[in-house]
Length: 203
Picture 1 (spheres, rainbow, N blue to C red):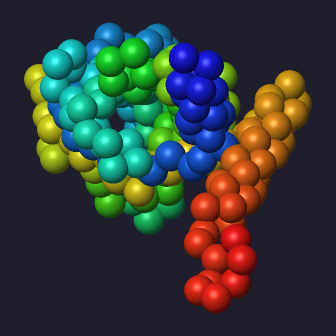
Picture 2 (picture 1 turned 180 degrees about the vertical axis):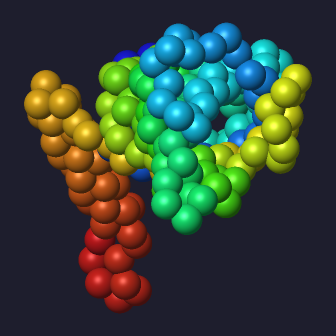
């Protein structure tokens, strides 16, 4: 029981130190207007994109079965030459798979919105289960497959989260590394003891 608990703790600690690659798909729809029309400049538009419940399917570090919940708002401003600049608001997000989750806040904005791509920036502030205590930064690209009215599919790709250990977790990560080294050293000693002596020599 003690060994099992130690192994589970080591696995959780290892998860806190790893990068998380992710991708997925789902559907979004226009949400309520979150900026009064009087606050918009000439030619500006402001979209609130809400993830439709039950439509998402994500993979994190090769593990499928994750879902994604969030709502992003993108403010598009016309630029010279017909390009569009994007600025986003901060909104909460959650990746979930059973008892495991990652959550935090995201921002939107990309210089390539006119090309159909929206950049998403992620700040992970915590998690549960395997990712309890995780914190990190990352980003991804989102492709919409049409106007989000009344709803449209999307794909998210090139997602990557990089851990940013908090000062309080650094000693835990160091201790986990020391424990792993000690376990490997003990295994080598056991193999050396169990190795049979060459023939013709006393044991």
